[in-house]
Image 1 (cartoon, rainbow, N blue to C red):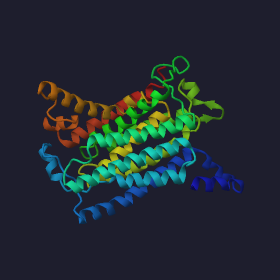
Image 2 (cartoon, rainbow, N blue to C red):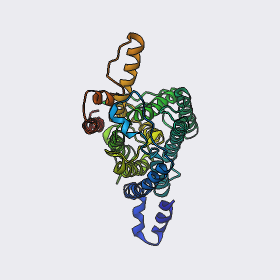
Image 3 (cartoon, rainbow, N blue to C red):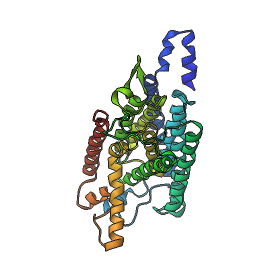
Image 4 (cartoon, one colour):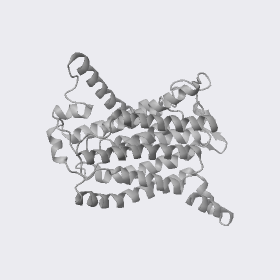
Length: 364
């Protein structure tokens, strides 16, 4: 909204022409998003403590987690609020990619909110039934992407890492709906599983978001006639550069939340936060045709999700556990690693994977 207002003033003051550039507006979005979360979280903490709305801890978890029972949660509400406000103010809200990103972020956030409220109601660490939650998430993705494929001509071709788009760029037509669903729903729930230690989820989220900001800029930006995507031999997505404003608002919100979530956490993000952030990362990956590269960039979340799948399959088929506890971060806690050691080392892994994902741009 402010984007249109200030950019419209360029007719009278040429200096306002700077608002045409997403790179300028993404800084404004990040700062505003950070400030909203920074000032909103303390009030949320006070509100939740007065009403004794705190985290429920699973009984079979590490003993060190029992002291965290009652810690305020649903801090993701502040991040979701900041992302929506900052994006609407500083991005081109008529841009279809921005619209889709906001729909996914908000939709998954609402699913997470209902899940969190269900936990409070039942006074348990278990929320909505998993099958119902997954069904709602997949339907949201299918409907949204069916619309933009049919009415906005969204590209259903796949871009593969290490392969130039001009050589191999297969079109999977409406099967792309299922593929997009797996990427977005998978990323959202993988991030949700990662959210088990103080700052463990938000740190890698910021790292992945920074990587996607770079990838989105490369996929949708032409500088003085120089097409970055064409140079890198990746898919050019006209208008995708505007996604950098959305991603920057997410980064700003995440930094503001990390201020209160790092060890020892004063508040947790809850499912409203993990699902909205995960869906945002997955959606951006799909929109800029970096779906498969996202498996590298978001590799830490994928590893955490796979550890749960492996544990369940192993126990159901052989009555044996591969890990001392799943997700993987709990396995290392059970081995005696201090919580901060697990967090920092997982962050390092996330950084390595994000850099590796970006590096695929030149390995084509």
